[in-house]
Image (tube, rainbow, N blue to C red; front, side, top):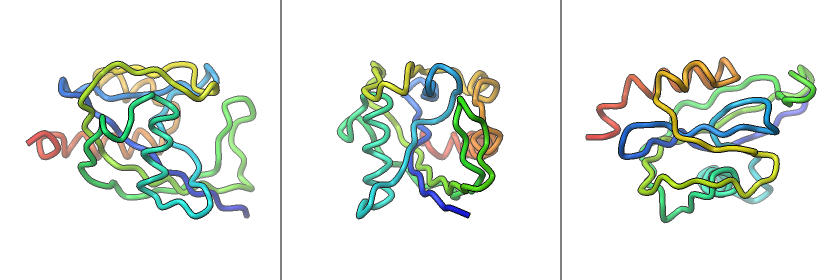
Length: 143
């Protein structure tokens, strides 16, 4: 089985909305993507967030990491690939600005949504479980 490593973020704005991105106009997730050779997890998370939302490292405050999780890779056009496993490393961030614009052409949209909305539009069950855990820590995140 092939193993892939990804990094990204669960990003909250000052109004406690969360940022979600649309991949290829088909699925909604948190901004995340592949870790490049020689790249550490945090650097990859910042790079992927910038590509998928336009938010730069200067716009983000890293709060904490969340437990990594694994699942089969998923392509919006082909579905799950059970021969390839993806381990996802996410971090919680606070954003200082709210204007977002994806740079990566595969990410057709990025938007801030209320947390209760995000739970329903996230396409992957793993993302939903991790997000619910992050929400349980929301008062700690913004204190």
